[in-house]
Image 1 (cartoon, rainbow, N blue to C red):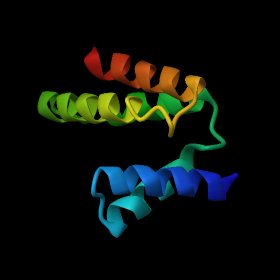
Image 2: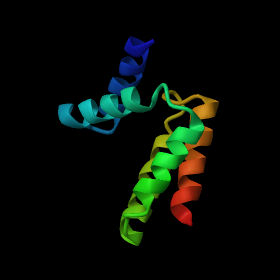
Image 3: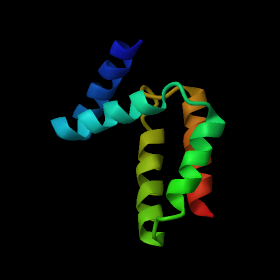
Length: 91
């Protein structure tokens, strides 16, 4: 399974011209959150969002919307999580 995720990440990273370092960051994030429940991820997001400026929130929303468009990378449950993150950031 991790190899499959890395293949998908590598494909997306190539499509957006991501550097090796950016790909590594994407891969690390995927590993960090892959076994967490939606509740755990939501709580962590709430903690992080509290320190963001409005500009940072708007920037992150744009990036999440771009990620959501990469349908080959995400399944339905993951797209729902992205929607939840966007909702949290929009508050």
